Image 1 (cartoon, rainbow, N blue to C red):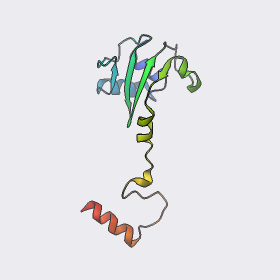
Image 2 (cartoon, rainbow, N blue to C red):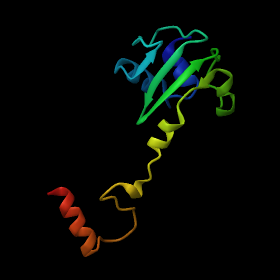
Image 3 (tube, rainbow, N blue to C red):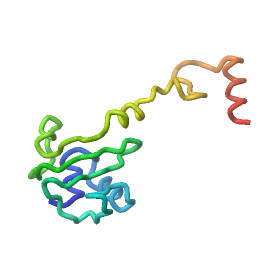
Length: 120
């Protein structure tokens, strides 16, 4: 099965075109090599794919006939992504300086001063 189709089928990317764009941009490696979208995926291949801010590491177990449900993904791909990577991506938005949750109203005078410190 083609790499772009496999990445889409095991739900690494939402659409096949997103998978193709990521492969062409160099965000996907197979066995530490930058492949083409048409490269065949073999069982045992180690695939490192950057999906947004998360860098996922997958080992191919097989090739599904088409896109599979989330419950069936472990039959075709073993997720080797380190837990530290997932924790890094899950940084709460409240820790980001200057972040204001939607619907929190206008900034207070104190908030405004903090925003001014960041921007100047």
